Length: 101
Image (cartoon, rainbow, N blue to C red; front, side, top):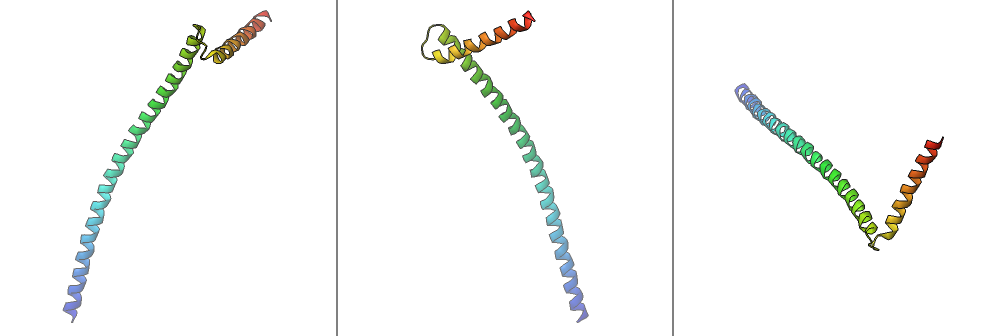
């Protein structure tokens, strides 16, 4: 009877050892995958940041082109052009006041 119990115990220990090795292997695989995903996330974040900067630059360029187009006689964006000119006039007036002081 003791031999049977010992055999079961050895079998349980061996099974535990196999399971532990599998867990360690899975852990290592997950660690590698985690690092790969972290790297991919960082790369994607940089791409998104670059694209956002490009969007802002293009929006500013679009705004500038609309203003230039309106100044060349287009009536399409006349209101925006008038607002921009008024803003520039206010800035100039502020500068003149500061120079006069």
